[in-house]
Image 1 (tube, rainbow, N blue to C red):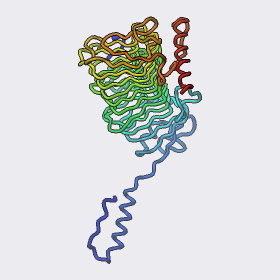
Image 2 (cartoon, rainbow, N blue to C red):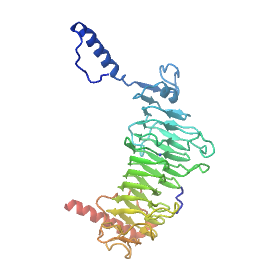
Image 3 (cartoon, rainbow, N blue to C red):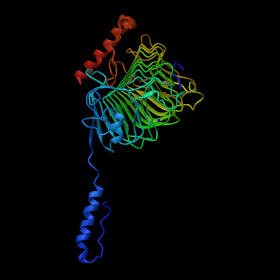
Image 4 (cartoon, one colour):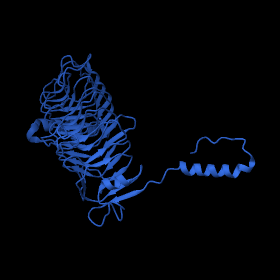
Length: 416
């Protein structure tokens, strides 16, 4: 399977009480109002580099977990730069902010708030938790052997939803983010750098984002996933739905099974060792739009239904306005019996003006409609993604073809 392996105030009623009780009635209403108003959220500070106290929190807590335990729902935990060898378990709605909160992790520099130990870094066990601006690393204990270990830098559970995983560096773990959600509240994974999650001894090693408990109502947007050796993203739960995978850059596969009503758009997948997107079986209503697939060692997109066992054929998989360029076997391959009916793959650019299956263009193999096609790169697909094209790999003709296509696209925009 090309090396891709297998979460008060109730209504005020008018009564007939004697007028002598009006003061008591007003007082009761005021008390009820006071009870109904939630306590104001509190900021709690963590800094283990100076004076700190995990009991009083004055002037700061020494550990993140102590601050989390002392907090009330809605509080914000501000964690200073430094190293915190902890597994932080979050059991209520909180905002956790590292030193780099609000700063895109894909390109930043400066002091980091580094969290993690062998058993884990962050475990989310509540709805609507935010983790923003941390480095989560060093999770190396195999969770298939030690049940209390997490395997992932950031670990979520499908009993909860509303996760906000923002601006984090997630690296050097068995796998990066264990992403599961029941979908009640929308979740967001954005502006993260997810890299080098390949600790070989662990279960599901080598995945940037991994899900097997079920996932729904999540946006995975503008992340960079690099050097995760099994897959950039792997979704293999019994059911995934309403996924939006958008504007990410990756150098390995996005693979999914049992997924419905989802979009994969605006992503740049450059030089993956396997297919850029792997549709693995029992997937339905998946739209691939405005993606760039360059220099896969196999295929830009593969539609299959037997790599994860014998699964139902996929249905209503569509590909439009994507760019395919110099993918080794094909831009698109639809395996025999892997899709119900014909795949609609019209209006894509296949790497040259003449369309799929012509000299210098990528192939389209299997039961797919590829005409009409684009004669130049798509207006909406990333041009190069996160990596410049390599002359040594594509050759002078290939590079010239790509640059001419990009120039034509630019001229068309200027003319418009």
